[in-house]
Image (cartoon, rainbow, N blue to C red; front, side, top):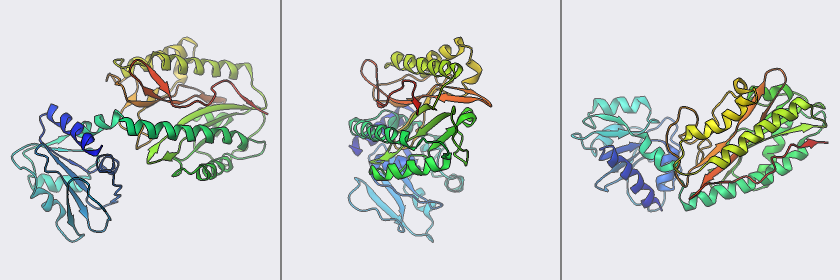
Length: 358
C-alpha cells in the first residue's frame, strides 16, 4: 500500500522533471509510511528519489518501530541535521521541497546547496493524497457513519437554556463514547444570529425558542476525518427561515447531482452558487462550496470558483453551501462526497429535511 502511494508521488515528480524531493509535513509522512511523527520545532524529513533509495531523517527522540520500506537516518538535537540530509541529496539536480518545511531548515539547505535549485513540489504529494485509494475510502466511509450516529445523538443536546459551550462539551463526550480518536476539529455550535458568522466558535450564548441551531462537526476514526453540518430550528421556524433553508438544501442537492469525474471544481461551485444567487441571496453565500478532506480535515484542494482543476474518481470533498444573514440567522448544510466512476456518493446519510426540535 505505502509503496503504491510512494510510486504515485514519484510519478507526479517525474511529470515535473524532478528526481528528488524532501517531504517534511507529518500527515504526508504518515500517508507514505504509516508512521505518525510530530516533531514540533525539530527537523523531520522524508527523502524520495527516482532511484528508489529513499530515506527517513528522524531525531532519536522519536520512536519509529518496524520496517518502513526505507532506511532510517537517525540524528540527535546536537547533530547538524541539515548537513546530514545534504550529504545524501544530489547537489547537481533540482530538489523538490514541500510547503510545510520550516524556513530555518530550508534556508540552511539552500546555503548548503543541497540541490541545484529548490522547487515547491507540494502538489506531487497533495495530488496523490487528493485521490483516495480503497483503504482510505473505506476508512472515510466508516468515519462518516460514526459521525452520522453522533449527529443523531447531538439533537438530544438541544434544550432551552443550554449554552453553546455546554453543547460542544456534550458533543466531545459523545464522540469519546462512540470510540473515536476525538473531534477532527473543535465543534462549531451556533445559536440564532451567531450562525450568521459562518465559523462562529461556541460561547456562553443561551438557546431560546425560535433560534436556528447550526452544528458543524466531525470526528477522527482510524486516522481519517469526517465533517458535516446540519441546521435545525428550536421549537418554531419562520417563513423566512424556511425559505432560506430550502434554498440551501436545493443548492446542496443540485451540486451533488452534478458531480462526476471530468467536471471542474469551479463548475461544481457554480451550480450551487447560481441557485443561491437566483434566490436573491448571492452576497450572503460568503465562502467556497467545499474543501478536500482525508488525513486532515482540510486537505489541499477546494471546491471554489478559483479552482479549475478537474475532479477525479476517488476524490473526497465537502459540499457545504450556506446563506448567512447578519443579525438574524444562518443556514449551512454539509455532506462529504466521494467521486465514483460515473457520479458521486454522499458519505452522510443523516436527514437534510427541515427539522424543528421541540
